[in-house]
Image 1 (cartoon, rainbow, N blue to C red):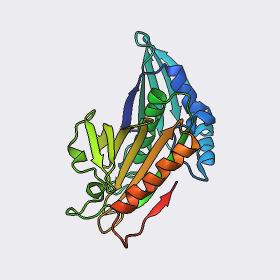
Image 2 (image 1 turned 90 degrees about the vertical axis):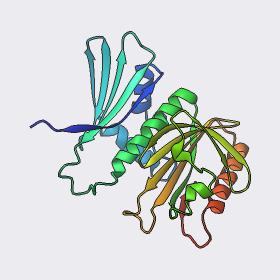
Image 3 (image 1 turned 180 degrees about the vertical axis):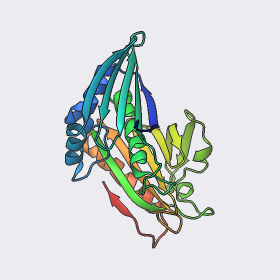
Image 4 (image 1 turned 180 degrees about the horizontal axis):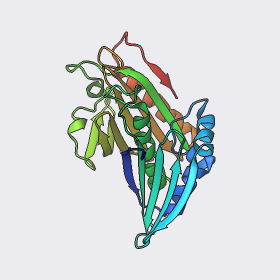
Amino acid sequence: MTLELREVVSVDIPVPLSKVWAYLRDPALVRRWYGWDHDSLDAQVRAFVDTAVEKQDVVGDASIHTLSWPHHDRLTLRSAAHEPHRTRLTVTRRSHEGMATFDGVRDEADEAWIANAHQLQFALTVHPDQERRTLTMFGLPSGDRSDRLLDRAGLVGIRGVPIGGHVQARRPDGTLLGGTLVYETPLQLGLRLHGISEMFLVLEETPAAHTPPHGTVDAILSTYGLDDETFEQIRERWSRWWAMAVPRGSSRVSSA
C-alpha cells in the first residue's frame, strides 16, 4: 500500500543544492537554523542527522536529494540544471487520517517543520557562514480578543500585512521595531527584522483548545554575527519587550 503524504512546507532558497545539503548533514551547520538554543539542542541535532536516510537522484534536468526518517517525514531538495543557484526545499509528512495524536487543530511536528524550514532559508540567504544565537519566550498568554498579546507588544494588525510587506511596531517602552513579513500560516508568523543586524523572529500561536483559556504564543529570535556586548543589549531589550506586553500576574515560561 502506498503511503499517502501531504506537503507541510515548501520554500525557495537562492543557494546551490550542495550548500543547502551541507546545512542538513553537518551537525555544526544544522545548529545554525534548527530549533533554538537549549541544553538538549546538540542531542536533537545529532538525532536529526543520524536517523535520516539519504537518497540522491537525477530526474530529467533536475538534481534531487532526499532525507527520510522512520516516522515517514521526508525532506526533498530539488535544483534544475538551468537554475543551479536556486534550490527548492519541500517537507512532506504522512496523512493525518487515523492519527490518534492529531486533534484536527494543531500538529506540533508540522509547526516545527514550518519554523525550521524558514529559519534555514534565512540562515543561508541572509547570514551564510555565521554562527547563530537565539532568544526565546514560551507560553506567553495570548489574551482575549479585546486584549491581544501581539497588540500589546506593538504588532497591531500584523495579520493584515501581505507577505513581503513592511511591519513597523512600537514596543511598550516606545522603541520602534521594523521588519518584513516573510511568511504567514494560520498558527505562525515569520518576520525579518531590520537594524544593526538582520534577525529572524518566529511567532507561533497555540490555540485555546490546547492551552485554555485563550491560547499561548511562543517567540523565537535568531541572531547572527553579534558580539557579546551587542547580544546582551538585545537580550535585555527582548526580555523587557515581552515583560511589558504580558499583563501582571500572568505566568510565562522563558529561556534565552
